Length: 272
Image (tube, rainbow, N blue to C red; front, side, top):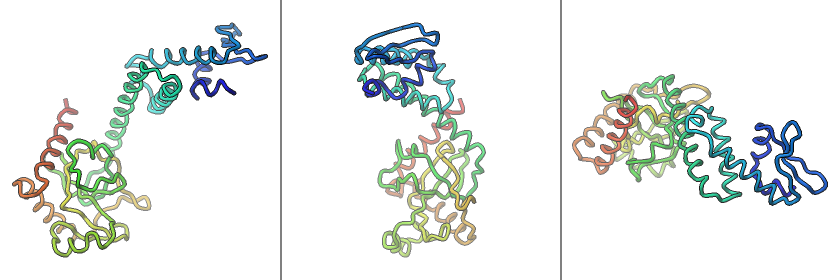
């Protein structure tokens, strides 16, 4: 049906929800209400598509910020998808503001969801967690590992509620083996869930709880370091690394201090 190529996928569902439906008969299209009242009629598919797209434009852009904010996440995502489909078809620059607005609201809802989840997550040293992609924005050192699929080991939490996280790598043995042997205070070798891994203490980062996406699970269990000798080494090596950062004796000291301040500012802003 040619009309379907000229209107977004969400058109029929929205028109139906608003009490309108499309009728095609003998090469003529019409928009009717539920009581069969004709709203618009044309034998030109371009004209009927334009009427529908104009209606959808008003539908998407007339919602207030409060109405958008009070939507459930699923509805927000549906609106966002519909807006983008309509923008792709009509190329109407006025839709850009509405798309930006709904994306800001979706982003805020995601952060609120993460905070709600994190409030139920026990944050404990030597347990492993997954971080949100947003942690790689801002002052995150660009040379540091930045895979969102990488688990992090919590080394500890300071008096400002900043979590110090150590990335865990299962890189090939050749990448870190020599460093682990020559600089055992920078990288520790440890098997996580029966997989040979490296605890990259040299890449420790400060994180506030808003960026903790979830616990790192294996077979449904929260993964943690149960080896007391390794825990003691993590404690000692992390303290050494934080001392180097504090005294500007580490190459990335400036970046880490800036990242720490950003994470702290987020917490302060949230508490207001």
